[in-house]
Picture 1: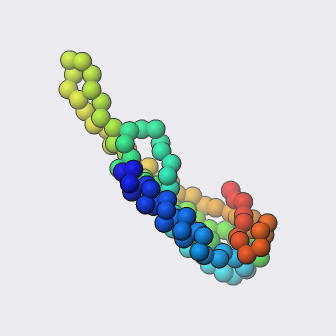
Picture 2: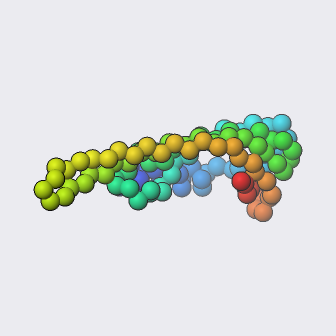
Length: 114
């Protein structure tokens, strides 16, 4: 799993270095995909967090949209005098998001959101 994380991180960095982002404009729609590196402290991650987000430009500085993410993990437990057992965790996150876009750096879409 460590090699998958390293490859994904390298691709994300390479993609980020060679793309130009611009601030979202009124009436514009943006769909974004993401791969996370977070851990939930519950065993071995079987699938890193993956997400998809949609944003619609309500105005030149404000966009609204939705967010959906999925991840999974498993953990094996053993105890004296008891059989071992495995727990599988599934994490699903869905939500609404609102973003305020403010150009701090030229040609890079910087924003904060809820």
